[in-house]
Image 1 (tube, rainbow, N blue to C red):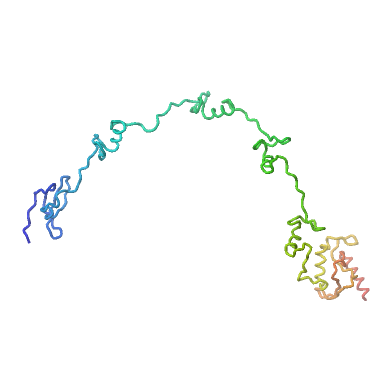
Image 2: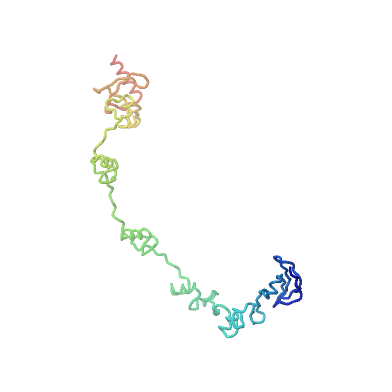
Length: 305
């Protein structure tokens, strides 16, 4: 192991050795100081071999203008002062930004201090002058529809709201020709027209079976095999409730009564177990009040006895 060389006080380039600084990777290091006043350790071998002679700091060049500490850009000036010198020939020239303000005048109308907009008038009075020919506020007369005998307010194109939309829709302010309601073309059918000349019922029949008169047989139709409760329900569907009719005696009817004059008369128990008679034809029933109905049933019982 070689003898340690004393480097304290020696100068290596820009670095001056101050004192011993310990070891680094098994080798002696010395504390050095650079011209900028910064101290840091450097290995002795790098100092002796000339591998470390500067601190690495660069001396920054600043703007030559007094009091401006910004970095140098060109010709001894920073970017700001160089731009002033390049544009105006003097780095101290300072121009205000924006356009110079124009002198403003007040509106020439007495009592109006608003700034003038054009022709010595403010925007309000200038627009009045352009529109009405006077700076004074002119009373606006109400405008009405141009159609004769129409007193509605004007909307557009000389028409009121109603006539304006007629013109847009039909090309004329006159009312469009009224269309007569269309009904079903099937004889004795007064239902409103739906499609192809038929009402909804006959159109559906035509679309399904090709014939508007075709009525399919209902799978639940009993025909003449209907019972007592069923025939009374059929009578109600055909003629309405008995209370909607008048009894021959003048009172309001309450029941539908079988006339006992049908050749297809049937007998059997009804819901309460009584033996009753009925027929499958709705034309064999008449509306009776309670009293007349009881009298008729008693007369039938006497005949049967």
